[in-house]
Length: 355
Image (tube, rainbow, N blue to C red):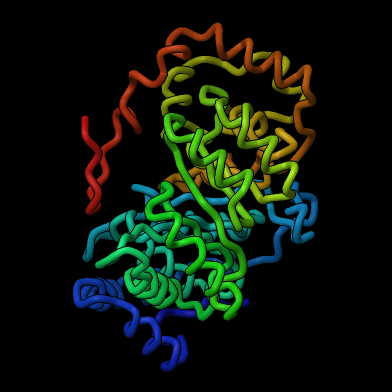
């Protein structure tokens, strides 16, 4: 397949896209158009992914997904006029390497816009499995108009007339949004409905919705460091056959920070691990409840490392225990939450993290 530039995309699709954006986002799209045309002209062709990657099945629907996806928080939040060449290459490698699930949110600054534009430039808008979110309340109780506007905007930004998963972000207005999203599902505008949270302090209410809510997916924080989802959320998801996506599987680069300069343990070779990203990710996706992990990166080489976790054997229960015991012996592991997200890294997008 020849990679198209932005100008080759059908005019109707472009109008639908711009129709879904606010004035600021239109300016962003215009500012980036010439950059994208030049960048994509030099991009490599998209190739068919290798068939030997790990896919995991959503029990209640039977659909299978590659076990490593891509997050976009902070990493794809690029301001208007800033170069996105490396982001385009990250996305190209992701698809070439077998990745399909891409997660974003209107809350992530320009990330949703950039994910949509770059996917379209690579000819991937209808080939990726997009998971997005709503983060809205309303003008009054039971008002769903804000949710409708958010969904319309997200569909325009992602160049899609149907989004694979829409999730209630951090349970915001969940009692109103879930019925609304399920109505959108009946209308064919979305395929699956979900809920999310990244903070274990909210896992009790999240667990209730996983046990009882009209949902198909849950997205939750889970990593070698943060394992609280095993207690209630994973068992409930397994009982109901829900899809489970993982946010923060690398703990926002903090797991890498504490092993910086440290060689892999010898036993890592037994499960085909070649780098620390694969060590952390294979551990996470080997839990039987997990469908897909969503690590994020701005580095093409790091994307290739992440995708390698879908190849070779996964750790069994004894190996998972051994891997965890090893990490618990690493200085700094037990205090990881005291470390800021993305230590030593600065992002220049719209979203700013507190120190």
